[in-house]
Image (tube, rainbow, N blue to C red; front, top):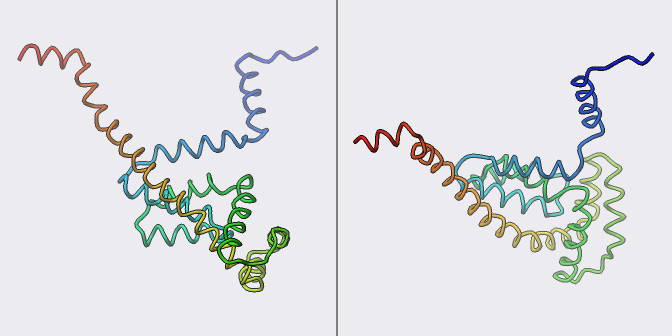
Length: 201
């Protein structure tokens, strides 16, 4: 005979089963975006952190993204958490191939290098299978001329996005800050007891 399971317990089981299947990329992006929007602090510092995270995240500087963001946020007085969150949003397994391709294309135009996209893909494929120290030697030492071209292309490609991200973030955080400042005033005005006191006076 089948054992009867309470409805509440059954819902909990189904909920945990869904949770065990893993988090979808869409939910991950939404979660990181909400974390970013809810950050508090000086809007200018937050915007600088987002600009730095966008710039570094779009450049072909893997596996140094985190180190570079920490360094530039410290030097440029940017918000570190904002920078790290944005770098995750703009640089992920779905966007990295496109970023490297555009960086290579722009770098080829600027420097006139003869390196093909197949060479870049081959290099990235090998670097993916080795440890960080071997990857650094392979990409930034043994293939220095190739990476100079790709890095230059990545910097030129990333800069307009960083500028746009800065001003967009600044506007967003100033607007949210103004909303938070005005919220207590609205509750006081709508409070019946406070309105009675105002009318009595």
